[in-house]
Amino acid sequence: MNIKNFSVELEFAVNDKPTKLVLESRSAIEGYEDENLKLVCLVDDSCDTHTLRIIVTSKKPLKMKSAQIVHDHFFGKREQFFANGYQSWTTSREYKRGDTQYGLRGPSKLPFARKIAGVSGDYHFTVYGRELFHSFTYTYLRNDSKVELFGSLNERTGYTIFYADMKTNVFVITKDVEGLTIDGEYELFNTVHTIGTYDAVFDRYFEAYPLKHTGRVDHFAGYTSWYNYFQNIDEKIILRDLEGLKRAGDAANIFQIDDGYETYVGDWDLDTKKFPNGMASIVDKIHAAGYKAGLWLAPFAAEFKANIVKEHPEWLIKNEKGKNQFSGIAWNGFYALDIEQQEVRDYIKAYFDKVFDDWGFDMVKLDFLYAACINPRNGKTRGQLMCEAMDFLRECCRDKIILGCGVPLGPSFGIVDACRISCDVELSFKERYYTKVTNQEIISAKMAMNNSIFRRHLNGRIMANDPDVFFLRDDGMKPAKFTMEQKKLLAKINHMFGSVLFVSDDIGAYDDEKMQILLDSYKEFDGKVISAEYVSHDEIEIAYEKDGKRHTLKFNALTGENSDK
Image (cartoon, helix red, strand yellow):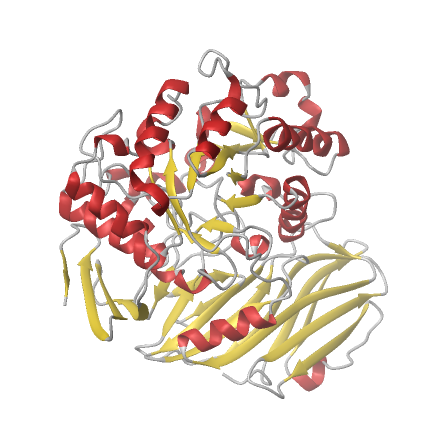
């Protein structure tokens, strides 16, 4: 694909008069000027990483409707398009001709269900269709070992979304400009383009990216409470499982308390019935055991029954009708706090100060972060709102460790230390019926492994990848319905592709076999992944090198059957 050959299409309104501008060549774009705007097109193709910037300077306020760069491209039969999903949980994988990138499915597409099923995704501002694929922030086209990468260097002016229309053979770079009015100079696009091997193109992309890996976390191994107890935790359970983790010795380095310690999400008062001795005393015990102490928070969420919803309804993001914006189904529904308001920012910062200064935590897992940009507002795009929200969280957390979750990945680059790159793992390896009738953020062991594999390029380059938990327990408060073969497979995938390796089990109850699997899985992977791809609808084949030998791991993502030769 030649970065020099493209057209630009802009749609906007001036004084409520719709205008469409189509410039069909790079030469037509360079230095374009009319009564409404001036365009500057800057292309640098002097090295391996080519850059393209398009800057708009408005002469009158331009209320933007769409902005896109269009390029004709014939997609070969074997050519793969990588789709990076909207946020942490969204399905991300390679697609080729004949494939479908699913959006909402079945009853979830109906108007009465769409609001609920689609709230955590991109379904209301992107387009889905057969042989029509899209990717957020970056993408690549792969022909066997040749990889052609396109990536955004600026999501602060709006999300950059790459489309591959394999029916019409068009490659399009769009900017999500909903809600944006340009009044002055505005950088619409800032992208890179590079060709090479898989590893080489991602090395170049993140070398060019303005923010870098924070370097605070290379490898986490330990415990999180969620997947055995969910919100049903208390001091006794936490201290018992802390004692169990000690069996791992120095193979573990983190112990994280998840949701369930607070009275209500959004209020963040400690439930003293569950934790009568307070959090600081537990953190002291975690530190005494030699581990960093982590705590889960959803800083922008307020569940419906939280006191803050009743006491400060003006702090909540509103929809187009002026009502509280529904922002997610967790806790039987929640709203989102509007950090465009200084009082809200002060409120959020105060509970981070409590977590770090009073309780003594070293790390926070910050969840449901997409809620900060649930809709564009105040003349800002979703991308701008999300980037500013991540800046704010880093300010609140100072130099403490952030594990991001439920977050659009581009705005998290260089801000978070580690990040979930998959959906939640289901407690059943077998796919539940609802995975085929809802959204692409639904919990699933299959799709968690899928994302761990196909987002592997992020790990160590811009963040430490969190592939979510693996299970080894046979019982517990919430038994994991996995065979031993399935448990070993999930542990192996997490070990090979992740740098945040958590279980939620009472490790004190493990037998010797499970203990050895845990210790092996906690180690840093000392091999090198060469390639990974779907070889049939549900089968993935991974080629890797380890101990000087080449291996092939092939597994069925639905059944867990696998071989490693």
